Length: 418
Image (cartoon, rainbow, N blue to C red; front, side, top):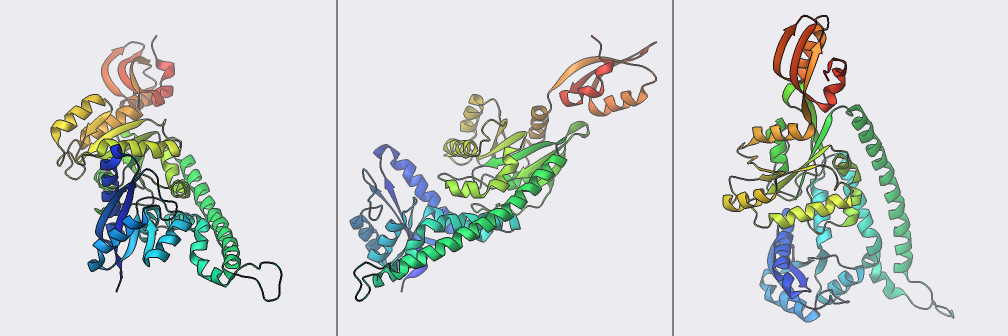
């Protein structure tokens, strides 16, 4: 009896030079399958010049892969690419196994992990948009009844085709309904952001499972759920965090990125990703213990470009310092001045990180001010907002040399000495 909780993974390598990359991609698909509650009983890669139009992968190759794992009775084939509706349908018909692709696995994980109303709506939208072009796969069996009606001279449409049209209408109506709900969420977020306009906004971004939520908890004591699973975080969590001199920032933890993240999935998460787009600074968290972290950095940059957030200032944070190869890490940091290595789990270099964030958010310069004795409130405010370096009491007032942030300078402009 076939076991639907067991799967074989298959992928196609179109260029010999990318075989190692394809192995890595299939390993990642195995982690996705594990997160989705599916046991992987075999991984197979076929080298070919172009995908097969009928099955994406070669029919003979698929038959051999299924035969190799028949003792495990897998009920599922997972393709490491997006299948066309006909390719999925053909595979299922030929091999009598369910065939799904990488996107469907990601959608299942998103569905299982959605906790908030916002994330549930976004997952629902992504699922509906994925289903729409694939309806024929659901109702193709009814087309067997398609044929000429008795005594008629023209062809009549089959039941499957009629059912597809009905379902398409229903799905489009549901998509419109979910989009309207998400628009309300989006507008609510915009109102929240307007209320926080004077507070700097910092957002954690990075490849899934890089340690974003662990760092978020370390910095804010928020108690956000942390799991060694892909996509443990789907909705944004935000907290106020105090920096030096009473300055505050809003820190947000967001959904992780992954290679080949489907475009419609990114589009569905527009409300969550708005926190990224509106940020003053992005903290790009990287799992530096993973040998492939440079390629994951590239994948994150691709998604940031996709949502038009590539020009927002970034700081590269090489996490898991306690597990990483320190020699390689040193070499990488030398080439990237904007980076810092930390261990969110053990709390290493967290104070240095906060200082760097503060410096990035608040550009400051040294100024000399002469504040009249009658303006004691201004002196108190300067002590609160600036870093005092020298104070001299003169007949006409207090002369103070201080480091002041640009956003606070307007409070003291009338006291500046030329």
